[in-house]
Length: 251
Ligand SMILES: [Zn+2]
Image (tube, rainbow, N blue to C red; front, side):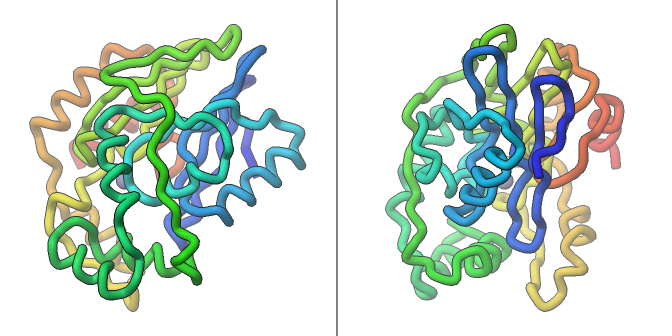
């Protein structure tokens, strides 16, 4: 179910079993934007069903927060223009060439292109991996793009941050709300850490041990400081206040 956050913002909560992220819906008088595409056709189908059951507008555009599979693999199934930053799109073009048999997936873990955690979660989300179809975006921007939804504007900002170089956030000034995607999270691809599907209970504590890149955090905070927001949400956790977000980096 999409939960109402403000008059113009709803959020469908993350589902951790197959790493489905929070999905945001932002709508004005004319258009609506979905923040992140979901991780599969099944995920998208569930989101569409719930939108129609709740009488909420279907998205006219889908924004991808970054290239990671859990945020982008649903893109193909919305049948609306997909928006992304340039760096995200470059990564998606590479990933669209990837093969999904066990051997290819293992090789990408060895080469560092992919990580064990995502490989295990993809296997779980997709009982049939021949269904994976990665598509690049239709509308690509460089640093910033403003979308007027009709009385509600969304600022799409290439924010970088500590998680992934391509991360884009969506600031909705009238609602004083920011969708962060995973931009504020740890770098699961660039830093070593352990994941064992037999011990999923250790996931959070293992991720907590990964150090933040202090310079990337400092630049990210500088950008966030300029935005007038009260609440925000990250890709896989609960809504936070501005203060909680800022404090989270010192943990
Ligand atoms: Zn991510």
